[in-house]
Image (tube, rainbow, N blue to C red; front, side):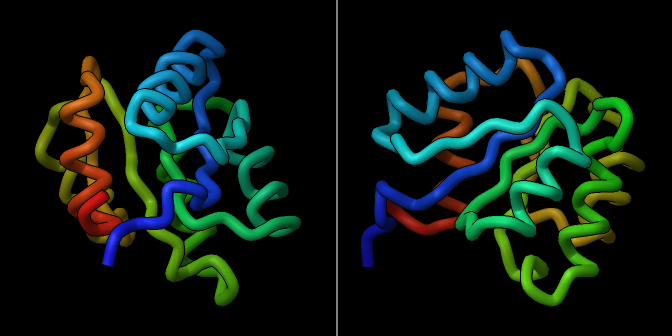
Length: 128
């Protein structure tokens, strides 16, 4: 079954430029139902207020990091099943392991392009 291209995606990053880049890459891949949050706490508010099908979050943010957001999402019964892709410039294996242990669905290392994003989305959502 093909992925619904109208799924609701929340992208979380404290840099406006990165939000724009991710949104544009998603648009190239034909995903149009995208909302933004500038940090983990704003994202958590939006997640608890609405219904999202996918979270794409940066790791390094203030005041709430992507890792803290991931832990909050996984601990919340209503949100715990939501696919969660972490984006980071960190390549240390202990970070990847920590994210996996916390329940991340997949992981993208910056810089990345539409092909990389598509590969990760397919691994989490299925073919589209």
